[in-house]
Length: 220
Image (cartoon, rainbow, N blue to C red; front, side, top):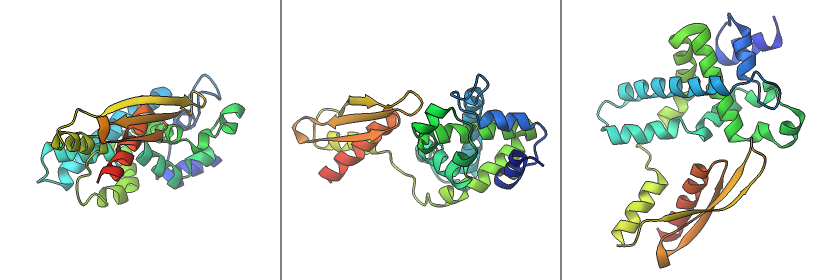
């Protein structure tokens, strides 16, 4: 039994028929032409379907809006990256030398993408049940923690601005740095004279969320 086959069995709970799918899912674009990106595209949709199905079952009284907030939190890049760290994705990823030196194994974007690619590999190799079994096992703690539907910081900040009769929050990218596979963005959010704050993240969306959270802390 190969090291990868053993890892798939132990960490993903699946006996692979086509091991090459999982090898591809763990391969960063810096390593070669055959890499995880197309699998990540598929895995993102499979994850969304399974989580949406699960939430509809788990929270039968929640309106659509609350279910959407829960879904957004559970399929976020940071949650996927937490799952990836728990199953030691960074330890088995295949990366080019420069990407490894640049810290790609510590990037939520990269680790999260690989987790979604692995979900796609499970789906293609073992069907929806294999993917569902993995997701339900690895996301159980995250779902259980959602006793209340989370509210997105940007939505809360928007409502706060309205309540204080101010214009909508304005988001501005003030800095973008890092390599293309592991970028870092800094975003400033402001509400007129009410206040402003900055946040950083591995995507513009994450940085905007961090900035909104920082400004909420100042204002609340």
